[in-house]
Image (tube, rainbow over all chains, first blue to last red; front, side, top):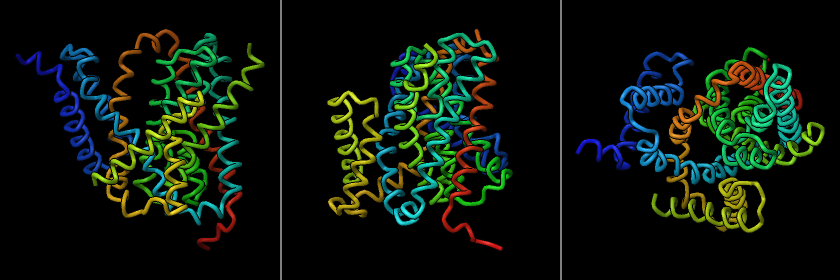
Length: 231
Length: 116
């Protein structure tokens, strides 16, 4: 009876919301950046599933419903962009050049490092689009012949990394403008980074949201061009 | 709230139609964002119509990534095989991108004189 219940969406949705609520509470209490609610929730749910021997497919019944809301959320990013359109239009040059440089840096550094460290060809290819949002990254990697599941995992890891360390790292580099910080975290860490920037500053969040789209577009065109040399 | 959600899903759907129709590798939700931005700028859609739903989704954006992250557990074996180049390249590259984009965008800021 209980096991049947685990295969309904109630389990996945309930577990995700409950764990996330607790993770948020923990983060508010401690304010330790490493206890980022997304990171803690992912780790806690994986541990719970593994230790109880619950297959991922059971969790996904409900998990996919939560994930579904990501789609309209990306569309909703148009709102902060529209509201901050004057601030953004004033900075056309810094936005375009900054994101383009970041897109090139991401592909070259991720794939280049993996290649130098002895990574196999599929791994090197799978790393190329790791800074762009999951659906774009998957379609890029399928085109160039990498491993889509590995890319999906790396995209999430990259996102958590930027969300956890991004704002602090930018401050240490002496980057003070919220737009530049938002662009940096959005370009490196797509939606997960954007979620963090929206909590920090509305304008930074809008810039990060813009970076998701622009970096996605630029990487889509850059990866096939850059990998012409790697065939 | 319901009207806003319906509009957001409609724009996602339109984006999805264009994405699939043209075969571009750009996902439908990103195209939906662009279309909604155009609709807001042209005043075809009023901010009040979507505000409540959009604010709700954006306030909880981080939550929606959790199931995607849990999916990583399916690929532990894949990562275990070549974990060193994978982890090192991912970590270093993420910081390289933030430094490159952040520094360049900061330097090109039009009027960054917001303090002494």
